[in-house]
Amino acid sequence: MNQHPADLGGPLLAALDIGGTKIAGGLVDTRGTLLHRLQVPTPADGDRHVLMAAVGRVLDELSRLPDWHRVRALGIGSAGPVDIAAGTVSPINLPGWREFPLRAETAAHPAVRGLPIVLGGDAVAMTAAEHWRGAARPYRNALCLVVSTGVGAGLVLDGRLHTGTTGNAGHLGHISVDFEGRPCPCGSRGCVEGLASGTAIARTAAESGWRPGPDGDTTAAAVARAAKSGDPLALAAFDRAARALAAGIAATATLVELDVAVIGGGVATAGDVLFTPLARHLSSYATLPFTRDLALAPAQLATDAGLVGAAALARPTALGS
Ligand SMILES: [Zn+2]
Image 1 (cartoon, rainbow, N blue to C red):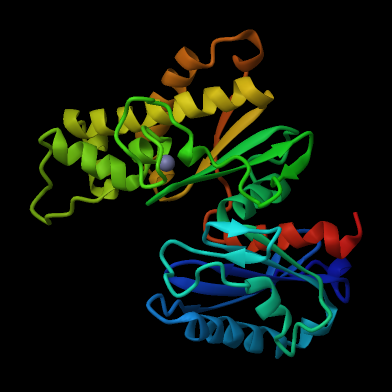
Image 2 (cartoon, rainbow, N blue to C red):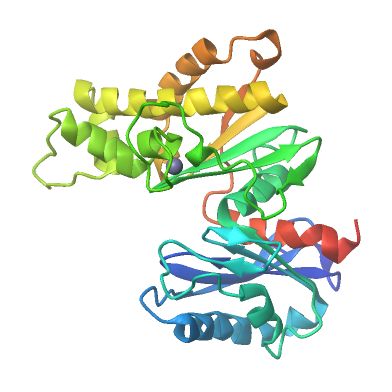
């Protein structure tokens, strides 16, 4: 399966991608090629034991693969918040896990015993994936965003993933770009997420008087389809989201000097409907000479980003670099 001859028998990375709807597992070679992939539905309403049992089933399956003996480290990308210092996760959409010791519980699985485990948030894992194999690869300083039901992000600085102590550095979704704006569930106001997520785009459209087609679909994907066909209210909803993202990206670029902003996630699949206003607004917010050349790129690793990213988190540990 997509195996390069030079990798036959070489070290592998195991990867877990834990989200609100699925728990995926995979084996990835040191070139970043996903060799095996499997997944189970996430028992999102389950308690801590039910959720961990689902993770255990994925590890059981992975460890039965003939290549398992080549695995040198396990990377875990999880829905957040995460605390990589404590080894815990508290995914918003998995209420059964609050400060759940995922790293220690995973380490206790019979197949995993002795393997180094590296934990990270899903957006940071996606950032690692895009820097390893995707759109951020040519760059030393990158901000990678996942714009979907929420807005997550991660940073690569000076060629290395910058996680921060707890693994949450670069969390652009909860940077305020409207300091007198709408209260955000995080406790702040006017956060990027509240203006630019898929949820926010759908709400902006509905509040402006946009009405769905005969199918009754009011999601951001439906708003994107309407925008593509020229609907002015749908276009305005995307323009507002793009403006919030541009303000947040420009602030980050001013703070740390970025070379590229990579945008992935479901909302980014809207394509030009998002990227055209985003580029325009970015040029009006990123105005200082050292921010003007910032590149904008769509993410490249759509479906595999979670697993490749989880493997990317573990790669330095496995290879001793
Ligand atoms: Zn917030």
